[in-house]
Length: 319
Image (cartoon, rainbow, N blue to C red; front, side, top):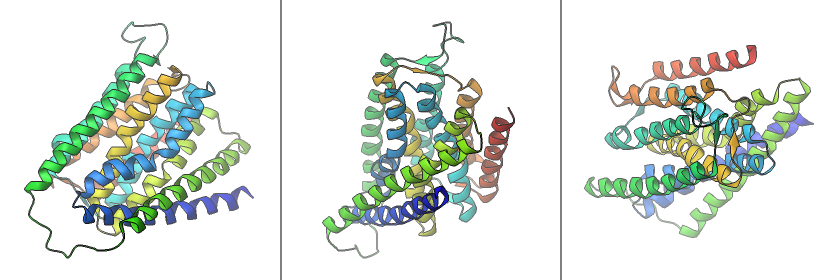
């Protein structure tokens, strides 16, 4: 029964991702909004809803290490698995704005997470935790960053030449229904997949900490994987990249910020290695813009991302 529910959840995720991508792209073209902005805001935050639900509920119920582990695992899955798979399907071009603004912001959010979870290392307390004040700081940073990023991207878009392709016409309401319906299918399908996968894992005797970083994180990141892969297949690499970068920023600053504001988050079984891997994955994405084919995430780099993720998961299971 769990396997059937698992497959049902996966079908809903894929269908929802398709409608979400088509609807968001149509709205972007209709109102001449850059696809990257739609990916960074509507798609990124929307597909991060499963992480938001899991982390906030975990914080409310006192399972704070589950809240942090979910975000840590989701960001690693986003950066290493989703971008790795997308790059293997088709090399991803990085714009000047991505390199100078968007990816560094993601790296900065990772470094802020490292700073806020290093209480013992910095001699600020007996235990590593994210307190309410730090949670509020995270949320304020998120709001300011989104305002700055959207403003900059809109300014850059005004300087671009007009798109020679004919503008798609159609009901804005219909496209809005596609976006909302897609998000609903993603959230419900992700929740169904997550519960089924977690139950299977527990029956196999896998520990809670490993579940948080692997199955829970991977399950809540399936919407990002589905929407990004479909975006790549349809030739919308900016939407895919914006989805991943935006989701990673939202996971750290918005989701952890809100969770810590509700209830201070203790690290529990989450280690500095886990946080360090989040920083490393963000750094690798930034460095990929300066390798042999500049401003491009190539297939071999995507393969390295996937190998690194597999090695990390193997280490977690063995230890």
